[in-house]
Length: 265
Image 1 (cartoon, helix red, strand yellow):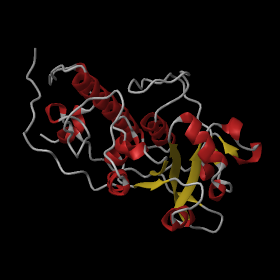
Image 2: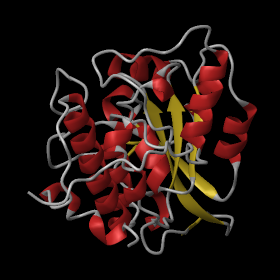
Image 3: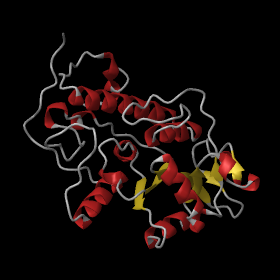
C-alpha cells in the first residue's frame, strides 16, 4: 500500500467559478436543506463536494483553454454532488453557468450568446434539430489556433453550450429555449462508450457533462485540456465511490497517473 491521502482538517472554500456561484444562489433560495439521494452522507468540503477525508481540492488542475463553456443547468443540478459541470468549471477558466427556466431568461446569458468574441454551438444530438442547423465540426476551421474569422473580419472563440440536466430534462430544455434556435447544433460522434459511474443511464451512448466537454475541447484543438479533464473526472469518480464505500485513498493508485502532471508539488 502507498501513502494514504488524509484530510487536512479544513473545509476548503468553494472555488470562485460560475457553477459554485450558481449553487450558492440556488441554496440561498431553498426553503429546506438539499439531501442528495443515494450518495455519501455527512459533512462535505465546499471546494469539491466530497467528505473531508476524501477531499480532492489539492488535485484541481489549472489550465488555459481557447474554448469556453456555457452551462445551462436544470433547477437542482448545481446542488447534486454527482454533477460534473462543476468539474468543467474547475478546469476551464471561461466557464459560464446559468439556471434554466421555461418562462424567463437571464439577460446575462443572452448577452454572452451575442458577444462577438464567441461562436456559440449548442451541443446536442443532431436528430433533434433541423438538418440545416446541424454541424459535425467547428465553423471556419476554429481548431487552428482556436480563434476563427467571421465574414466581417472579427475573430471568435468556440463557446460550447451544454444543457446540464437529466436526459429527459435536457430534451425539454432544447425544445423550449427559443433563444438557442438560431445557433448551430454541434452533433458529436464519440468513438467510445461513457465511463461515467455516478448515475445510472439506460443507454451507453449517454455521456455526462464532463465527458461531453472533453470531446468538445478535443474538437477545438485544446487536446491537453481534454485529456486532463477526462483524468480529473476519473479521479473525482474514484474519490466519490471510495468515500461512498468508506474505503481509504492511496496516492499510488493508477487513477492519479494522468492527472499528476497538473498538480503543483
